[in-house]
Amino acid sequence: MELKLKNTIQDTIDSAIIVRRLSGIEKKTTLRRRIIYVIYLIISSGLLFMTIKSKLLGTSIFTCVLLLTSCANIIFAKKINNRLYKKNVLKNYRIISKNYNHDFLEPTDFNLKIENGFVETETLGSITRYSLEDYIRYFCEDRFCIFEFKNGKYIFINTNDISKEQLEEVCKELEKK
Image (tube, rainbow, N blue to C red; front, top):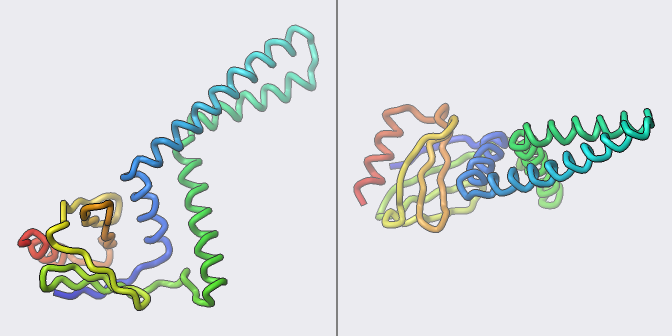
Protein backbone atom coordinates (compact mmCIF):
# COMPACT_ATOMS: atom_id res chain seq x y z
CA MET A 1 0.00 0.00 0.00
CA GLU A 2 1.27 3.46 -0.88
CA LEU A 3 -0.01 6.96 -0.07
CA LYS A 4 1.21 10.24 -1.56
CA LEU A 5 0.60 13.24 0.68
CA LYS A 6 1.72 16.87 1.09
CA ASN A 7 3.38 18.19 4.21
CA THR A 8 3.26 21.95 4.86
CA ILE A 9 5.34 23.99 7.29
CA GLN A 10 2.24 24.50 9.46
CA ASP A 11 1.81 20.71 9.65
CA THR A 12 5.43 20.41 10.74
CA ILE A 13 5.06 23.07 13.42
CA ASP A 14 1.82 21.57 14.74
CA SER A 15 3.31 18.07 14.82
CA ALA A 16 6.33 19.42 16.74
CA ILE A 17 3.96 20.91 19.33
CA ILE A 18 2.09 17.61 19.64
CA VAL A 19 5.35 15.68 20.13
CA ARG A 20 6.34 18.24 22.74
CA ARG A 21 3.03 17.65 24.52
CA LEU A 22 3.29 13.84 24.26
CA SER A 23 6.83 13.82 25.65
CA GLY A 24 5.87 15.93 28.67
CA ILE A 25 8.18 18.83 27.84
CA GLU A 26 5.27 21.24 27.45
CA LYS A 27 3.99 20.51 30.96
CA LYS A 28 7.46 21.04 32.47
CA THR A 29 8.09 24.35 30.70
CA THR A 30 4.62 25.62 31.58
CA LEU A 31 5.13 24.71 35.23
CA ARG A 32 8.57 26.35 35.24
CA ARG A 33 7.13 29.55 33.74
CA ARG A 34 4.33 29.63 36.31
CA ILE A 35 6.74 29.11 39.22
CA ILE A 36 9.01 31.92 38.02
CA TYR A 37 6.11 34.33 37.64
CA VAL A 38 4.61 33.37 41.01
CA ILE A 39 7.94 34.44 42.51
CA TYR A 40 7.73 37.71 40.52
CA LEU A 41 4.16 38.11 41.75
CA ILE A 42 5.22 37.75 45.39
CA ILE A 43 8.13 40.17 44.94
CA SER A 44 6.00 42.74 43.10
CA SER A 45 3.26 42.46 45.74
CA GLY A 46 5.83 43.22 48.44
CA LEU A 47 7.20 46.14 46.43
CA LEU A 48 3.69 47.48 45.81
CA PHE A 49 2.93 47.31 49.53
CA MET A 50 6.15 49.19 50.37
CA THR A 51 5.59 51.86 47.68
CA ILE A 52 2.04 52.46 48.83
CA LYS A 53 3.29 52.92 52.39
CA SER A 54 6.03 55.33 51.24
CA LYS A 55 3.60 57.12 48.84
CA LEU A 56 5.88 56.97 45.78
CA LEU A 57 3.61 57.24 42.74
CA GLY A 58 6.12 56.43 39.98
CA THR A 59 7.41 53.29 41.65
CA SER A 60 3.91 52.10 42.53
CA ILE A 61 2.87 52.36 38.84
CA PHE A 62 5.90 50.29 37.85
CA THR A 63 5.12 47.64 40.45
CA CYS A 64 1.46 47.53 39.36
CA VAL A 65 2.58 46.85 35.78
CA LEU A 66 4.96 44.16 37.05
CA LEU A 67 2.12 42.65 39.10
CA LEU A 68 -0.27 42.58 36.11
CA THR A 69 2.40 41.12 33.82
CA SER A 70 3.10 38.37 36.34
CA CYS A 71 -0.61 37.53 36.60
CA ALA A 72 -0.99 37.40 32.81
CA ASN A 73 2.06 35.14 32.48
CA ILE A 74 0.72 32.78 35.14
CA ILE A 75 -2.73 32.56 33.53
CA PHE A 76 -1.60 32.27 29.90
CA ALA A 77 1.64 30.32 30.41
CA LYS A 78 0.70 27.46 28.07
CA LYS A 79 -0.36 29.76 25.22
CA ILE A 80 2.74 31.92 25.60
CA ASN A 81 5.05 28.88 25.59
CA ASN A 82 3.36 27.44 22.48
CA ARG A 83 3.57 30.76 20.66
CA LEU A 84 7.26 31.13 21.50
CA TYR A 85 7.92 27.52 20.45
CA LYS A 86 6.16 28.02 17.10
CA LYS A 87 8.19 31.17 16.54
CA ASN A 88 11.47 29.36 17.33
CA VAL A 89 10.64 26.39 15.08
CA LEU A 90 9.83 28.73 12.19
CA LYS A 91 13.04 30.70 12.81
CA ASN A 92 15.08 27.47 12.80
CA TYR A 93 13.49 26.37 9.51
CA ARG A 94 14.38 29.73 7.97
CA ILE A 95 18.00 29.35 9.12
CA ILE A 96 18.16 25.78 7.77
CA SER A 97 16.62 26.91 4.49
CA LYS A 98 19.27 29.60 4.16
CA ASN A 99 22.17 27.28 5.08
CA TYR A 100 21.15 24.44 2.77
CA ASN A 101 19.89 26.65 -0.05
CA HIS A 102 16.54 24.85 -0.12
CA ASP A 103 13.19 26.35 0.84
CA PHE A 104 11.90 24.07 3.60
CA LEU A 105 8.98 26.46 4.13
CA GLU A 106 7.27 25.26 0.93
CA PRO A 107 5.02 22.17 1.01
CA THR A 108 6.92 18.92 0.48
CA ASP A 109 5.82 15.56 -0.89
CA PHE A 110 5.44 12.80 1.64
CA ASN A 111 5.18 9.14 0.60
CA LEU A 112 4.01 6.41 2.97
CA LYS A 113 4.54 2.76 1.98
CA ILE A 114 3.54 -0.31 3.95
CA GLU A 115 5.18 -3.50 2.69
CA ASN A 116 7.32 -6.46 3.77
CA GLY A 117 6.78 -5.86 7.50
CA PHE A 118 7.95 -2.24 7.37
CA VAL A 119 6.42 1.21 7.10
CA GLU A 120 8.55 3.46 4.90
CA THR A 121 8.23 7.21 4.83
CA GLU A 122 9.99 9.20 2.14
CA THR A 123 10.35 12.95 2.12
CA LEU A 124 12.99 15.17 0.53
CA GLY A 125 14.87 12.12 -0.71
CA SER A 126 15.38 10.52 2.70
CA ILE A 127 13.70 7.23 3.57
CA THR A 128 12.85 6.22 7.12
CA ARG A 129 11.82 2.66 7.91
CA TYR A 130 9.70 1.63 10.88
CA SER A 131 9.20 -2.04 11.72
CA LEU A 132 5.58 -3.16 12.04
CA GLU A 133 6.62 -5.03 15.18
CA ASP A 134 7.38 -1.65 16.79
CA TYR A 135 3.87 -0.31 16.08
CA ILE A 136 2.04 0.58 19.31
CA ARG A 137 -1.17 2.46 18.53
CA TYR A 138 -3.06 4.89 16.38
CA PHE A 139 -4.90 7.98 17.65
CA CYS A 140 -6.24 11.29 16.41
CA GLU A 141 -5.39 14.67 17.89
CA ASP A 142 -6.42 18.06 16.55
CA ARG A 143 -6.25 17.62 12.79
CA PHE A 144 -3.72 14.78 12.69
CA CYS A 145 -3.85 11.00 12.61
CA ILE A 146 -0.85 9.86 14.62
CA PHE A 147 0.76 6.44 14.41
CA GLU A 148 2.96 5.73 17.40
CA PHE A 149 5.95 3.38 17.33
CA LYS A 150 8.40 2.30 20.02
CA ASN A 151 11.26 4.59 21.10
CA GLY A 152 9.16 7.76 20.70
CA LYS A 153 8.74 7.59 16.93
CA TYR A 154 5.59 9.01 15.36
CA ILE A 155 4.10 9.36 11.89
CA PHE A 156 1.77 12.34 11.46
CA ILE A 157 -0.82 12.42 8.69
CA ASN A 158 -3.05 15.44 8.18
CA THR A 159 -6.72 14.34 8.19
CA ASN A 160 -7.46 16.79 5.36
CA ASP A 161 -5.04 14.89 3.08
CA ILE A 162 -6.48 11.42 3.58
CA SER A 163 -10.00 9.97 3.29
CA LYS A 164 -11.54 7.82 6.00
CA GLU A 165 -11.38 4.75 3.76
CA GLN A 166 -7.65 5.21 3.20
CA LEU A 167 -7.13 5.75 6.93
CA GLU A 168 -9.01 2.56 7.79
CA GLU A 169 -6.96 0.67 5.21
CA VAL A 170 -3.70 1.94 6.70
CA CYS A 171 -4.89 1.00 10.20
CA LYS A 172 -5.79 -2.55 9.05
CA GLU A 173 -2.36 -2.94 7.42
CA LEU A 174 -0.62 -1.82 10.61
CA GLU A 175 -2.77 -4.04 12.85
CA LYS A 176 -1.90 -7.17 10.83
CA LYS A 177 1.72 -7.33 12.08
